[in-house]
Each structure stands twice: as C-alpha cells, then as structure tokens.
Length: 113
Image (cartoon, rainbow, N blue to C red; front, side, top):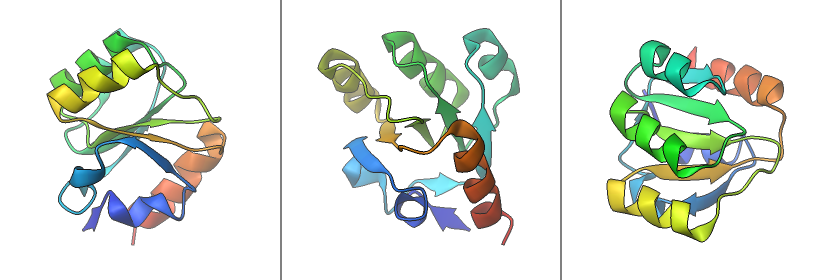
C-alpha cells in the first residue's frame, strides 16, 4: 500500500494544498480523464485523478468520487479560490510538470508493486 507522500518525488509534484493529507491518504491507483461526467462514473475510491482541468467543479467531482487527490499534469495550477474550496473539502491538490501519459506510467509502476 502506498500513500500520497510516496508519489510526490517520483512524479515531481508540487503540493498546492493538502500537505496534512500526505501521510494518511492511501493511493489505490490512478485515473486520467478530463470529462467530468465520465470521471464521476468511472474513477474508483482512493485513486489519484490526473487531469488538466482546474475549475471548482473538479473539486466537487473529486469529493463525490472520493479520489485520493487531484493531480494536475503539465504544470497546470489552480486559482486560490479553487484551492480554498479543496482545502475546505479535504482534497489534496498536486501539480506536476509531467505529461498525463508520463504521470500515468510512473503511477502505474508505483501502484503495481
């Protein structure tokens, strides 16, 4: 079993919010998608959701789907008001300069061990 803290270095992540969740939030796998309705019906509890979307709706979907965290790929960031909502809802938000493809490959390697 791995935790959010275990993916930070391999994925070259910046923690945008949720630092306090890194030690306790389990990671069960990953899911990459930018269609919110699709994510709601497909992502599994505890998965890292990789996306380039950064609106407040992303936080709502992550809460509803019980994602481990939101991982913004390709150096995407979130506006402060959206990060405030993520903090309020207890969702960690990470950002990586990696492409979604590369982030998926690395995360798959980490979770398949």
